[in-house]
Amino acid sequence: MQYISTRGGVAPVGFAEALMMGLGTDGGLLVPAELPQVDAATLRAWSQLPFQALALEVMTPFIGDEIPRDDLARLIEASYAGFSDPAVTPLREAAGRTYLELFHGPTAAFKDVALQLLGNLFEYLLERDGGQLNILGATSGDTGSAAIYGVRGKPRINIFILHPKGRVSPVQERQMTTVLDANVHNIAVCGTFDDCQHLVKTLFRDLGFKARHSLGAVNSINWLRILAQTVYYFYAWGRSTGGDPARRVSFAVPTGNFGDVFAGYLARRMGLPVERLVIATNRNDILTRFVADGVYAKGEVFHTLSPAMDIQVASNFERYLYYLLDRDPAAVCAKLADLEQTGALTIEPERLAQVRADFTAAAVSDAETLAQIRATFEASGYILCPHTAVGAAASQDAPETIVLATAHPAKFNEAVREAIGREAPPPPALTGLMDKPVRCTELDASDAALRAHIDAALPAA
Ligand SMILES: *Cc1c(COP(=O)(O)O)cnc(C)c1O
Image 1 (cartoon, rainbow, N blue to C red):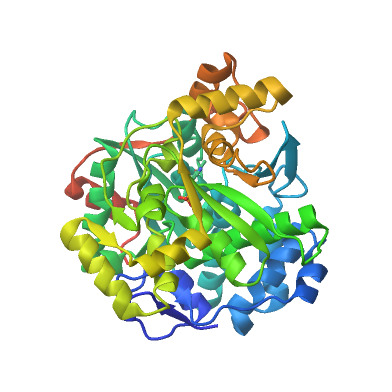
Image 2 (cartoon, helix red, strand yellow):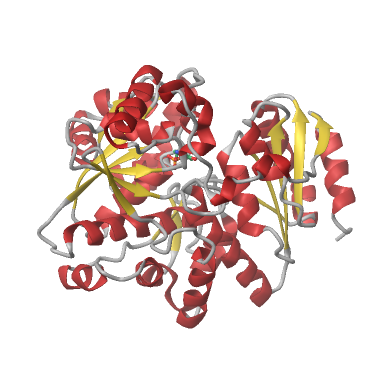
């Protein structure tokens, strides 16, 4: 399979190169040149496969012969071996709703599904082709720990994750700083999340520094993250329909960077019988406004009870725009130029009809989020994380909709306590966190300090 950029400025590259590139060298996002199509007979055949075997089938056409099938199968097995539920992403009924539980990985949030595999694929390709990768990233919460757990202990990879000192939740901080592997470098920056992001961008723009240290990123725009997440849409469809291609399923997806819901859109474009995809946002409702009026306009970022969705500009939106604009890179570039210059982009009325056929959307307030956690708990004893509660509330008019449960509630116990007056018991992944030893370096929000720290940590290349 060949990959091209949404902005048209990257000569077609294979899967391995696309994976290592992350962001397109032209600033665009990589997409497959063609989408594999899945027919009814295949859907039926896949419908009862275990998650790992299904992942192998779904991903193979996107990878082609670049990774031998046996090797890919082994990498997939290894990636999900540490999940605490044998089904990997089980479906669970509670209070008349169905939840697709995506939080049984090592950091108790759905990002593990993709990042466990991404870490193993990086290591495999670096072993095979030679090389070293030094990942640099900033986190405001969930992504940092999932990325750290994806690469910990891997000899050809180092990871440097910046978080704003004292401004991530205690659980999230401990999830990162209790990982003591020599290749994991936690950095608490005396500043805000924006300072952290700014530092990372500054170092990536220093092309000499970037090349000298083989710096790479693991943000939500890496194609593998989308691909790995399509698997659980196929899985949920198979388990809930028995593999009958005439039956369609709807999904409600708590949305921030548009990665997870885009994976569902992709599954539908590949032929999965998906009825409705619900974009569930919190008060940061740029995507909900877009579906309502066709205008994608940046706003102010609000802090909410579902912090992983406190995002205004959704980094994967550009991939959807590419498909919406009939895969025309020039049209994508024109819309992005509008966004850059005016802070907004507008879709023509005919296209807006297409957007509304592709998605419905709803914004959910913190009060509604708490009410949803409370109602579900009172009816069934099942505790939702606040992000999952946003998904449930956004789709309550259609209770047959499967809700993606994106994190374990014990990761967000402040919200849970506020809703139901007690905490969710921690899963194995979060047990004993507060008693473990930690390692973390504190740095001023200065790029010189960060450069010196990285120079000292990495042997001179
Ligand atoms: C990252 C995250 C989201 C948002 O996912 P996107 O792919 O960015 O839309 C939702 N819930 C939780 C718990 C997350 O960690």
